[in-house]
Image (cartoon, rainbow, N blue to C red; front, side):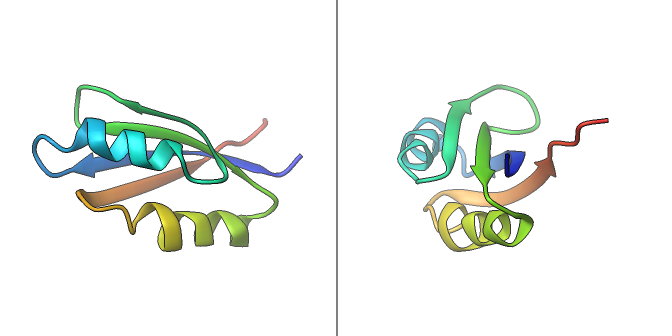
Length: 78
């Protein structure tokens, strides 16, 4: 099993649904939903290792128009 993470995303006003729809199409993303609260979209993603997770977030997810900030939270198994 690789690395799993939740990515919390803030978007420009009115862009949450559009951002969630676009991110859901990215390979490695298993779930993308628009939500209410301090974040506008929550994404669940999987990759083989931490380096690939970083590339997924920086190169693909952060490249989606309308995103203003991301916070990546890797899943840990205690």
